[in-house]
Amino acid sequence: MSGTTGESIDEVSRRIAASGVETVRFGWCDAHGTVRCKTLTTAAALKALSRGVGMVSTLLLKDTADRTAFKVFDASVAATLPGFEYAANVQLLPDPGSFCVLPWADRTGWIRCQPVFADGAPVPHDTRHQLQRALARLAASGWGMVCGLEVELHIYRLLDPVHGIDLDPMQADWPGPGPAVSMLHPGYNLLSEQCVDRAEEALAILRRTAQALCLPVTSIEIELGPSQFEVVFEASDALTAADNMVLFRSATRQALRRAGYHATFMCRPPFPNVISSGWHLHQSLVRLQTGANVFMPAGAPVVAADVTAAREARRVLSDVGARYLAGLLHHARGMTVMGTPTANGFGRFRPNALAPQSVLWGRDNRGAMLRVLGGPEDPSTRIENRVGEPAANPYLYMAAQIHAGLAGIEHRLEPGLATEAPYADPVGANGARLPDNLGDALVALEADEAMREGFGTEFLRWYVQIKSTEHARRVAAPDVTEFDRREYFGRI
Image 1 (spheres, one colour):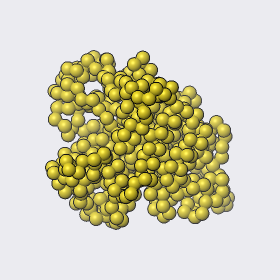
Image 2 (tube, rainbow, N blue to C red):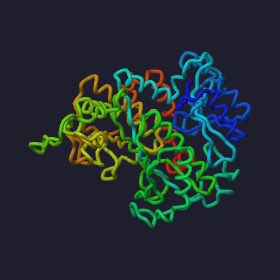
Image 3 (cartoon, rainbow, N blue to C red):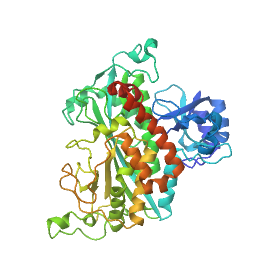
Image 4 (spheres, rainbow, N blue to C red):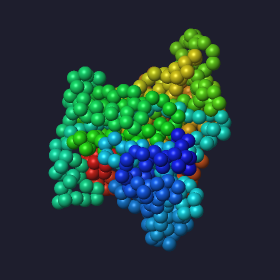
């Protein structure tokens, strides 16, 4: 597997040896966007660059509580999940060019990996592999995908980082309790400089960690909610953007934890009067040969003759862009769970909350599910999908956009008119409501032809099984808030 920087194994071996690291973490992103790792001594890591390192295959079968969602010791598993029989190993193959030195961990390196089966075949359930497949579909038409990220999160101060309730052996459970925390700022004071100053110590750690890892963070801002923040990234190609998101979340949580803070990418932390966190995904298609924006309409801006004409998609998007937009609308319910994968995240879909509720698009409209920005002569023309929560697996979130958008292009779908009232009762062909719980979202995913064709039947069956166990446990939980505290707050 070639490295993202084009470096050879020999070149990276020399960098590792020169870096002075004593251990290297071989990290891999699981179904839920969480990084798992094998930690090797430097000598072993140098050998593993070419050989890979073994990992138990059940890590691909875990739900959000880390429970295996399949019976791997049953005879039937060979037919339903070939390669996973008896919890056999898969091999983690490293991407040499991803090597970096972790700024918060002493003499520790990190390298990104992807799993393959014993025969060298890619594991179809690997989510990064799924985005690579989707991007290959785009490349067949001469297109690439560019993504910009706006990610919200909550950062708290740990009341007792050494002996907290989550570290009390008498409180241990599966999953264990969430940590006890206090806030960094009281909230309800958007972009307040005073709130920035109160949180400066934690934000400096976040900023310096991102910079040390060469993550393209452009701003860190005070969001509306108590102890809530937003981080904005420069636009980049989709695979790089997804890789950056995975590393950013993992690095942020670890670096802040060492300094006595708790960062969570959970949508709705388990406290009163909390404001939901979202992940707004900006996207456009570009021509691979030239980098030109495929969504930008040709010609000069045209003044609309009437109000209705001003709401037409082709005022702001090219023909390809309009049909891509239509695909996102047509398959919105089916791909919702790829952007909002936790049971907790569906509490964000509320009226007048700067979060979507219905399947609608709008021109620079933050209440619509899809916000279209730009227009003629604007090379930054793009579509912003506002359906995501910050816990989403970025590879699946982005791959779902591609499969839905390509379906719109291939079937020459039309997006209808832009909304002017996103929280009114749904009207028109695109006025369906988004699923309001994880169970309904999984049903919509299974029924969606573009998702099934894009991801594959085997992948969807695997994903639905994993997420269904999470949904069933939350439905059965006697205390949903406590479930969320244990399942999400302490873990994502």
